[in-house]
Length: 417
Image (cartoon, rainbow, N blue to C red):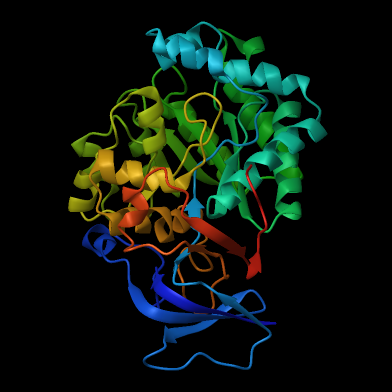
């Protein structure tokens, strides 16, 4: 089936050169054309052009009028935890009252709180809650997303989470990749026996996950008060034996060695980086490990923001993602993440767009097929209301601008309210 999107005022995020990620100064270029059309065939982008250079084709099955709006590639959110049970607003109040993330965790809150709640839910209940969040992020323009486990903290509950993710992959057009994060925290029954818990992750959880083919990646929370670089390395090596590449939580709470272990083990990404040092930036040069900032986390927890300008100045690529989770970032609104990246991390809008699209896709291993408007790529895009320029998107940081979202060339009819 041929689908034509016509009357596009700005067609943005276009690429004809096979770009798989953007680094350093390249991130300042988010290519666009004006007064354009876009052709999709059987869910794949086939061509685009300006009406001045070439009239839009007429032999199509369906026409959609963009009504003078902009068309952008869908956001690619490479770090989320959207399979979880219930909310944690009491911890929100605790933070207002001065407790730190680490202090809440020590009191039995945080990740362990979510693990207790998840244990009590059936797989069906967990699926229904997670699908509400999936519909929310699609309506807000996300077209590809990574979802982690990590609120199970025992073998059966981790498998339950991953089975829910697998079911979500089958029941939505949203492109989902799955990450096993058994090493998110030490389960309650292993309190004071962290080494034994790491043994459980390596010797029981990872083989069980692999036996059912439930995860694309393996992740570890390598940070102060959580898992050491040595434990992280052991878990990454175990995952690699089963074809699961690493994705690391690192340098969030303190300089933790997360970047070093990520680079040494060729992790696809190292995420958070609020406590990133200049040595970490130097370590990432010339590697395939994508630094990923989570500005929503810094905003919600009132923490420092990752040093994005330093990373770009050093010639690195970088990604921004939502970190959507119940404790530290209860939002999957990537438009707001883009605004935060501009306002708080001082990214130019074009840099933030690239960080949230093509580089986000690269941080999931998906940029061959997602993350830009390019012939041969999956037709995941959204149409905005008419806007004066692309810069208006992060500028109008709470204004709902997305009018229509298409995944694999099919419009997603979702209303949030």
